[in-house]
Length: 257
Image 1: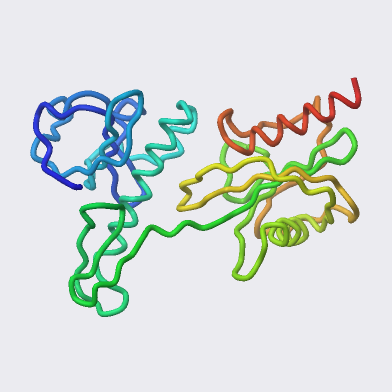
Image 2: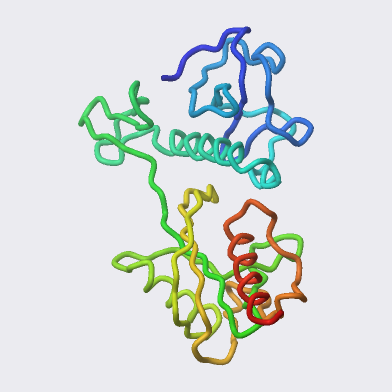
């Protein structure tokens, strides 16, 4: 339940608005409310990290409002807690009014939801399922530099599930659309909440089947087959993409060394 913060409240502070969050010194604020001039602000506890509450404060600051991506190098648990709070902030911002009757909404006291006092409709945060897949061809892995990627990072292929698709169909379609490749031996690995913007990423490994590599320039800037011991710049540790790549490297090493 959202409440007014006192000067003695403490914990981790996610001060967020419009998918940005306040990161003084480039890190998530931690300490008492008084330290960060939060006394009197409205806040909602969205979780707990290292025995202390994680608070969501839906406001902005004049400086140091940054992307959640700045926290990718932090511990995965803290990143997930911050990502959850940022997603909730955007959910509440985009659900101020009911989509059915137009009346003003209010926050639920018992769960993460928005309620309409007029038509009594209840809204929950929506999550978009997406896939990511590492594809192996003998001692090489298919890696791509996506149009939206920064710092020259090469990663596995990924994309969103469409209405009526199974995840297996999503993987096959996305790989074909982005690279003109057919795959086989698809195996599920793990999942990771991915708050860019509100996704649940499901990770797979697959083997090359057929096709000549031809990229979709609307999605990829570049792609290629990279030998396991001669790789480009990779995603940071702690991401599901990095885990897939490292799992594929381990498979290649076991068969070639």
